[in-house]
Image 1 (cartoon, protein in one colour):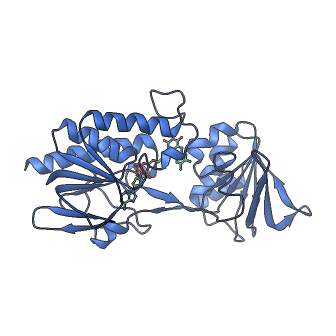
Image 2 (cartoon, protein in one colour):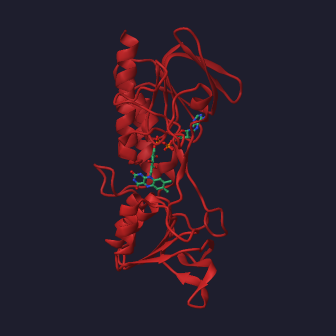
Image 3 (cartoon, protein in one colour):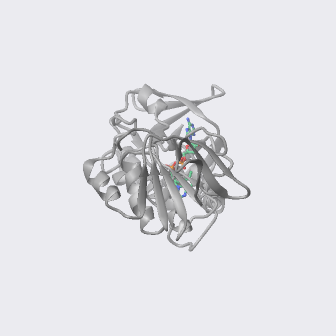
Length: 303
Ligand SMILES: Cc1cc2nc3c(=O)[nH]c(=O)nc-3n(C[C@H](O)[C@H](O)[C@H](O)COP(=O)(O)OP(=O)(O)OC[C@H]3O[C@@H](n4cnc5c(N)ncnc54)[C@H](O)[C@@H]3O)c2cc1C
């Protein structure tokens, strides 16, 4: 029996474990991909303490610290959580059951992809799903933002401060972004709006060089860009939580209070999977939510 089981081995899960171990809680992490999605980042420049660091290297450091404080890390997938009277059972894909008095869910979220030719090939070589993370790498370059909702408009507005030219490409006649964001991007001379258009392919040699549109522009379907920011939303990995009827918002993110508690006593959540941190889904916010969740779990277990 563990005091605490942490589901997910990204920044939120690792940070939660470090705090839990230092509260003397016997804790175990079960994670499908050790290191989480930041392991895909070729370079991180916004995690304090490192001017720049490769995502995988940063997560190795988190993992070393988790192991130093003695937590157990299991590489596996949790497929079910069962609520007992005063405890929980976590079942993995091999049917193994592990019991704990409290749970922290840190299963993250996945960026929605376009699913087009060349997209995967150019991730980290021009294609990005996170303007906050990668925008500064495109100083004075030409970039496209794909999407027409608030996050895409925010991305275009942010990138226009850094880049030479920003194209905002969306399928519908009008953007779905809120009026204030629509005004902002429409009035920005660096942003060109391209409506009723889908991006259907990404092309280049080593790096992204052009995107192909289904609706020709100035007689050409090819648009030369150095970067393409896909801003069409993300999908939280909250299936386990929803099965337990843990409250989520309309997009499926787990609702948490300021102590990272969910709607079920004894279950906490942290990181990209929650509706917390004002929607800023980054390593620093995931780690801080993990720290808060572990502290709340400790307070809960003391009682
Ligand atoms: C390419 C890229 C670049 C980025 N660049 C930056 C950057 O420069 N700076 C920055 O701050 N942020 C960046 N981010 C965002 C950052 O990666 C996330 O905000 C952060 O990883 C969220 O941490 P998390 O622990 O909440 O979730 P994640 O990192 O997504 O980790 C979730 C963990 O849960 C596991 N999991 C999921 N389901 C289950 C299950 N059923 N059972 C067990 N385990 C499960 C996953 O395998 C993983 O281990 C980037 C993201 C990407 C993809």
